[in-house]
Image (cartoon, rainbow, N blue to C red):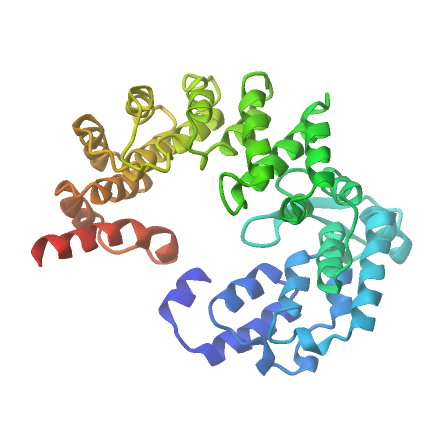
Length: 392
């Protein structure tokens, strides 16, 4: 689908395909088409699903596609309230229980995990010839937001913790709560930090990370609180997934305490933690500053056995714009790495430092692979811009 969207620029076809995707309950594809220029407003209501059918399907992506700004006005507040109540019934009853009630079947349930949108997954349940997804909690959150209804922090946290980190309900609740920037949310995050259950600590860490990420400035009250808490937390957390999220929350902060907290885990046994370390170094506001400790850590991490650690370290070294010869030579060595993803980020890092070797690296890579244009284009593009500056 991505490759077709890159190759064909017929927006009428994309709009027609959007209707087909919605009718086939493919919310992820419908979302891709909307991002690619499909115009939902050009399709008549009878060419799409009803909002009730979308809510019953349990797919948050499908519901969001039908709430696209182009057709949002088709649904009066009374209908949105009715759909909110429908989503709540599914959520509170439980997807399996409601599906059994509707089908009357006591057969074995078939359960799988499926991609629902670009980033998140949901469970998919099939029984008695009917298939639904378990995203009703996320749909409920979306519809409340559309209606301006403020669910309590406790309720949103419960919806998230009913699922795991990769589920849409988790991400929806975390983002919504972190934007509130109020004492209720902060107190909840602090309480979760002290919980014995790693999944609850993980959600607390995610809240703090997003509170820092969405801050208007480093001196904002809750940003300062989050950074201080995450810095202390990083020294005591034992769960790898939680520690990774804690370290990710320190990435954009420029303080030496945060850098020291990140560096403390440079030799961690878990690759996910090391990736968080690599991605968080060299992020001070003074972009040419790189401490000796951070420099040595990046040199080490650019030779890490884990490919994603190498990629993160190379990107951080380039974006630090330090110009240290040892770092640029380490990046240049990655131009010969067998994986294209590593070569791409090496070209990118060298180009940021105006290193001539980025041009040859970009030429060897050539154009982005079909279907990967968005992911790949940014890296050689920096090298081509450097080449233009050099030649002009």
